[in-house]
Image 1: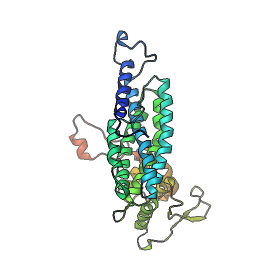
Image 2: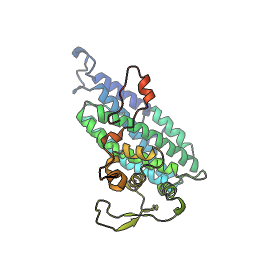
Image 3: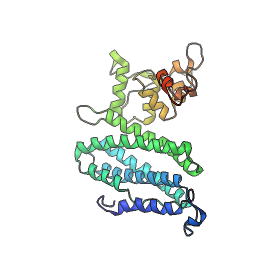
Length: 313
């Protein structure tokens, strides 16, 4: 891994931006275009690609450091996941960029380098805590960036790449939040610790028991049950999201938001929550409009220019 104090990391992003500006064909006359650059470059597409590459390079290098130097096993494992998943995404983005004549940074930019340097000054539990909090913040920003590209990009390859990568970023955010929210007494927790805390709040007086659920929830004739208390060996992101669906009305908006952002609100709700699936008369109580929340009436009344209520409310 290149030293975080090297000035070349900053130059790498600046050079990519400058190169792409020279190749940009979206805002210049034909006489102004760089005739040696080959395929023209769209500025918006290049901007997303450089930002995504810059963040992805940082995630890999910082993940490598966390996997080797974190004190908590869950943080080490998270770092290893960052290396594996972001290396794959980085390689795919590099392939797309090559076909579109987009220059990408070879190393993280100065903003990312400074962040890594500050984090690597921390040791032991202090590093674990600050690294995981940074991962929550970074992945929220990543999801916003990729969602915008998936929704609005004019380039079909970039649009498809962003859409395909979003579930992975959402998995990373859920895992990071589970580790941070599982913290007790200043110690970081693992995902199973956080999961079981939420589960015990729902169980109330029965906290600590291993609750049972349908082994095959899609088959109403199968009465086989399985326990769903988590351990460090069986916890998965799917298990966390399934539990969100079982107690969809609990824990304020957090359950709804986790299912919404992973695009599984309807599928998991109908599979694991009988109130959602069947209602009182056999009619499902959830549909596409539930991916949005109603806007407060005061916001609508005071909007200028006027904004309409979300569909279905």
